[in-house]
Amino acid sequence: MIVTLSAVALLGVLAFVLLRGRYVGPFSALVLFLLGFFTASTGAASTIRAICLALADAARHIT
Image 1: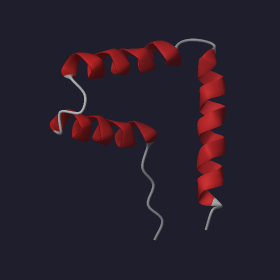
Image 2 (image 1 turned 60 degrees about the vertical axis):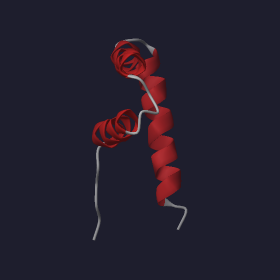
Image 3 (image 1 turned 120 degrees about the vertical axis):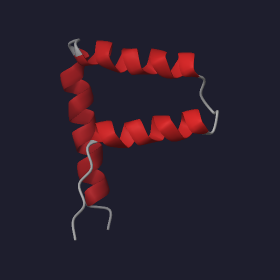
């Protein structure tokens, strides 16, 4: 069975776990959240997306 999960959902769960475990404060989480949106609107978005796709493809071929 193939399970797909979007990066947004995965990062959202990770942020929730970090906040719940008090590893990251609410202000830091807000800054990182906003940084993601600002990064997505820059010219670096296509490069970051390509890197993430390459890493996901490499992880899929590890087995």
